[in-house]
Length: 588
Image (cartoon, rainbow, N blue to C red; front, top):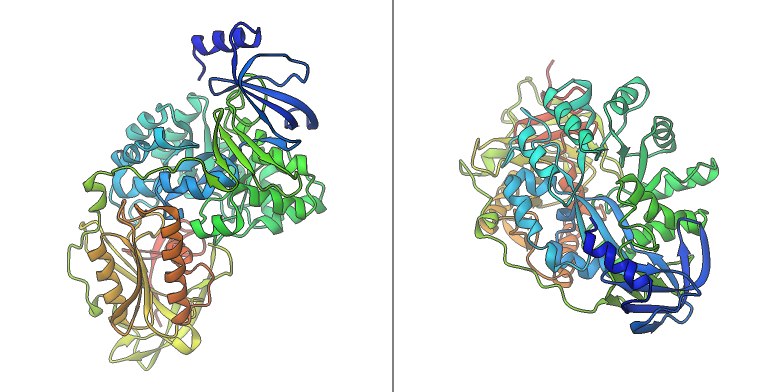
């Protein structure tokens, strides 16, 4: 928000009474308001744009010759969870800012489910050190599935109302349809509080269409980032919802959606971009929001439209276009410089008038701050975990039994509800490694119940060993997949000993691991070290036979109790649509 002093200062600077800080000359301005590209000069004072008039003759303390490069507004990630980058907010800067992203709208439901409001505050302590803007989509679902999972904290109506008043808060975070369709008063009150503050409510309407979607939209939901096909995209646009076109590590939705948008000549004004969940190594190798922009242009989207999706469309959606999203007078001077407009690879990035990145590197290292010790001690077992913790006793008689099965869908976080027949040995239901049917378990890690939910999954391809991770959306208990109960036990106990992280285990030995001490979700290390460690862990998973490109990301989502068709929590197997516990074994 602009103060009286800021307004007066920028006016007097524009009138030539005080010098500007910076003049950017010989620049091609990408004006997302007028949808034009033209040569001009840009004047900056105290973090803001003073003038873009090509004929202005203002004094400046510093002049930068941009050598005919394009100047674009800093990109906005409209919905992301920085915890799933595996990086602290500080470490994320070196991976993301050189790609041109200067604003993130972060739903911090992950750390909130672990550590509540104090966890959010601990993360925000980094804000003053960041060379980018971190805005908050206030977590609406802590827990995500009340009565169906155990979490480390709860954010009720009062807590959410208080956080919505923080200056960093721009919306109520993603709210799934069950909270609306089952008419849960607590969540309707959270929506009402948000709308009364003239802030927006983010959606999470995976798979919903027809009257259910109409009811969902009628509650005040503003957008959805879960579209996987054109039918879902156009259904939401027709109801006045914005669509966040997502491209993460495991949720590869952009190509199908943007091909359909181009083919059907859909208007772009209500489309914006997000990453949702993207690992640091994918950001490094592919890009961030600039990847979404460049890929869309490749698919036939006009460059100006793709750039607007990443800038002014997003800013307007969050009702902050008076501050960011364009290079226009009075707005924050967040600027990307690129030699090309059809394939944007930033040569320089400015944040609030300061050069923060050049030639793909931060100008100044963003050091990771000191996080409180309590947030690094969040993994607690109420009862010992051993191989017997993962045993499933058969209720049916005979040598085989029928079970409900989670089946992965390639490059998606949604899954299919299948059934399969598995052998019974000594009264226990066994894996079928040849058919790629493995045990999947969620171990409660807050020391509250000691619960272990066990089911079966197909699609990981492991031939031996086990993988485990202390980030399992959205409850963030320990999730384990494995070929045998012994290795699964070793993996879960390794996570406990590490106080959060991810591991690969084979024949009783940990063969790869990564420490994630901040809430059991994020590393304290710099981005380069984290990316090297995740590469080693992914390679270890491949050595065990895993066929998935981002195995730990998929592992973190497979237990979700709000993404169809099946979820798994520490309490058991979940029918996501009906929002209830079901039996793993199908009884005769």
